Length: 334
Image (cartoon, rainbow, N blue to C red):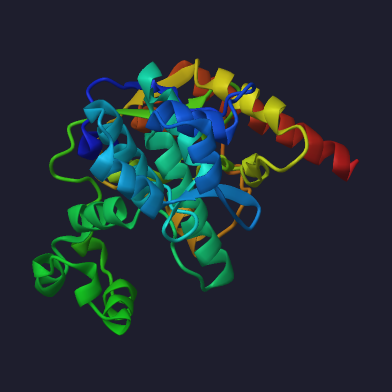
C-alpha cells in the first residue's frame, strides 16, 4: 500500500536500501547533494546525541537561494525525507537519511525502510505501554483511514488527526469490532504475498538506523486469506542497530536474502481465521513456532497450506520443522 501511495515509478520494488560498507563522510555526502563547499557544509553540521545532523534552517536557506534548480529540488526532497519520513531530531535532518537519499538514483525502494521504522516504533510503544510514535505519521494516518473508514463517521470526516482528542482515539480503538475493519484497502489489487526471503522464515527489513524482522503471514486476513499461526521463532533476534557488533555481516546476509523473494498467490476463503490462531493471539505468544501434537497430523498441515496456496517450499519447510521438533521432544522424554 505504501508503494502505491508514494507512486515512485522508477523504483524496483525488490531492490531494497542497505547501508553502504564504504560510505562517504557526512560532509562529503551533503556537499554532493547540496552543491555547496565542504567548508560551508562542515560549518552547518551539528551533533545531536550520538548522531550528526544538519538544521532544517540551513537547508531552507539553500532552497530559497541556490542558483541551481536541480540542487534546490534535491535539497527540498532531502528535507522532506529527514523531517517527515525519517525523523530523528526535531528540526534537523539526520546523517543516515543522506545515505539513503544518495542511493535513490540506483532505483532502490525506500518502502521497506519506512515500514521497518514504523513497525519498530509501534512495537516499542506496545511493549512499554507508552511512548511516542516517531515514524512517518502521515503515511500511517492514510493507511488508518483506508482500513477503518467504516467504523466512525466522525473519524472519516476529520481531515486532521490533531482535531481528534487523545481520549477520542482511545475510545475508537478500544471499541473496534471485526465488521468495522476493512482488512484490505478497497483500492488494492495485489494478489501476491511475499512471505519470506532467502533462508529467513520472514521478511527482514533494513532500517536506516538498523534492522527488524517482519512476518507478512501475520497479515493474511488483510488479503482476505485464511489466518493461521505464523512461524516466528528467532524473529526478535532479527532486530539490531548499526552500533552493535558485526552489524555489517548481518546487513550483508539480509541484503542477499532479498535476492531470493518467495511470493505466494493469495486465495480468498470463507473463514478467515483458524481456532488455533484465536487462541495464540489471545495469549500473545511471541517466538512461536507450531509444535507437534498427537492430534495435529501432517495431513492437517497440508490442508491448511492448500487453503493458503503456499508453494511446495514452505510445505517441506514446515513439515521438516515438525519432524525435528517431534524427534527432539522424544529425545527429551527419553
